[in-house]
Amino acid sequence: MELVRSSDDPQSCWSTVLEITGQSSSGSFATLDFPADVASLVAQLDVVLAAEPIPSETTFLWFGLFDLLVGDQEAEGYYVSGGTGANPGADMERIYWPEGRYLKSSVLDRIKAKIVQIRNESALAKTELPHEYDVLEYAVLFGAAALLTKFTVRALGIRLPVYVGVDSGDWALIANTPPDADGMRWPIMPARVV
Image (cartoon, rainbow, N blue to C red; front, top):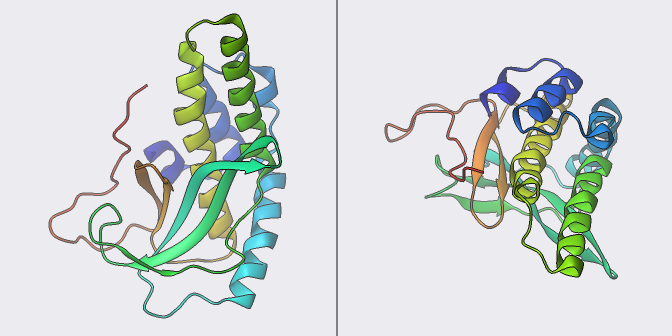
């Protein structure tokens, strides 16, 4: 996540994420338009924040990822919330749950579509899921969400610490390092290795 935290350009950072995860030869991911998706997310989040401002006692924002079913189609769920506390993994309390918290990302949905395609092909062939599935489901999807979130909150001038996390557990600080709390060292990295 340090790559994302230190990047000033979402498209070049994305190229590096693909290279690190062994996905740079996947033309469909190399052509994902991060600046356009960030612009869309900025517009969506601006509407949410105007309608439901962040409470003053909020100490961080959380952008969560989850599995979403829309009709019979799988998509990547992505939302904003906020909370209090110094460690989202241990002592956080979510106090900001805006009604309009669900955000739509074409980048995340395209990655999710590839994940679903690989899973369905493996099920049809009755074979084990390939290593690429784990890489896409975790590293590539998480990296994309971190990039999108970082540049979205930057465009909106948000100064609170910002985390991206998978609702099932792993998370990382991706923007605005908080003051040290209880000897924690930042950034906290996701625990899962693929």
